[in-house]
Every structure is written in structure tokens, then in C-alpha cells.
Image 1 (cartoon, one colour):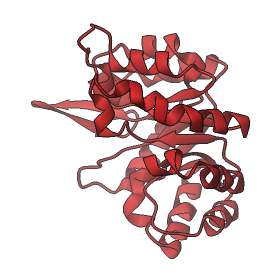
Image 2: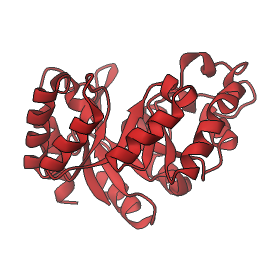
Image 3: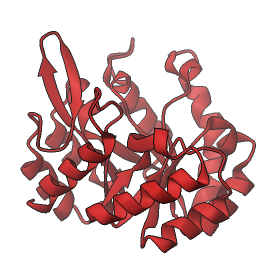
Image 4: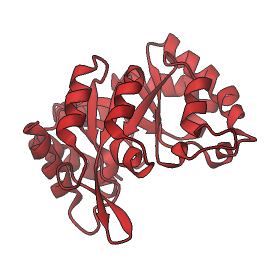
Length: 251
């Protein structure tokens, strides 16, 4: 399992080519081997790949808008071939599909693209938040429905440790139960603070990362553990990435 940095953490510093080059240099200097592309500015994909190569970083995973899946799948595949990246991510379920009335249409709209990705040697990866673990009128969770709609060979899950905890599930038990889908995971810690939960660098919160990493290291599926911290609450996102990497090295 390789440790990577989810560039969404440092998205403010990835909006043009010059800043992206500076950011990748800093990420590589921390010891990261791979990155996830997410929320980058309008930068030529060829330049993105060149900058990653120049810093010894592979591209593990991406997040892409809905339109790239439903009306631009051929270009999406071509871009990932350029990146040398097999895992093609959807960062969040579009809001209209959250309704029980419309959830089934998500499969109708995305399955053809998932099948095209599989034929190209790639895989669609769905990134969870917490809302997928709320119970629907039939008593089952949205995540259960999503995994029924998409077999494991067509959709992996980029399981996010913070959002699993926020969603009220047993993080390690869920990772173990659905290991066949976990080619990539997002690692971020969870800190209760008064009446809210906050994201934190790995090792700075209350998640048992020794147990989580052990589970992921032994499941035979997880290739990439990607550090992500959507909100650093005023701290340097680079410092947060560095803290997470140092904590993971000890595990």
C-alpha cells in the first residue's frame, strides 16, 4: 500500500501551473510517493503529468465532475491513459440522486460509463461522505443501495475514514466487510470539539489508525492510502499533510 496526498487538501495552491509545480515539489519532499488530482485549476493534463513525473510522483486517483462521466467518458478515459491512472473517481453523489425517487437513475446514468472504464482497464471509484449511511424509507442505507446497483467489478469505494466515523459506522468493521472495493482510501482523523466534529491530521484525533492501517495493509486489495484534510481550520495544509505522513510512517 502506497501513501499518497489528496491534493484537495492544498487546492488553493494548485490553481495554476506554477503553483502546482511548487506544491508537488513540497509534497514529494515530505516523502509522499503518489497523489490524487482533485479541484485543480485549468491546467493542461500533459503539464500535470510532466510536473508529477518531475517530482517522482505517480497519479493514483482523480475526482471528476458528473459531466465527464455522462457526456465525456471517452475524453475522460484518454486523460487517464495520459496520467497513467487506473482509478477514476466521483467525489460525491449529485444531489438529485439523494432522493429515493431518483437513486435508481444514478445507475442508469453511470453504469454505461463504469462499463467503458472497465473495458479500458480502469475503474470508477465512488467517494463516500456521511449521508450515504442514513437509513432510507425501506430501512436500508443509501450506501447499501449503491453497492447493490453497482457490482464490485464496476465500482470501487474510496472509503473516507472521517466520514465513516461521522456516519456512525464501525470504521474497521466496515473496511473489513467491503475490502473488495477499497482499491483507494482517504485517511483523515476525527476530533470531537464541543458540539461539532472536526477533521484532523492522522494521529491527531481519536480514530485507531494502527488498527485501520493494519486492516488495509492485509486485505490484499488496497493499493493507495491517500491523506486528505478538507478543512485545516487556519493551520497550514502543508503542515497538516506533513503531520499525517509522519504519523503513518510509524505505522
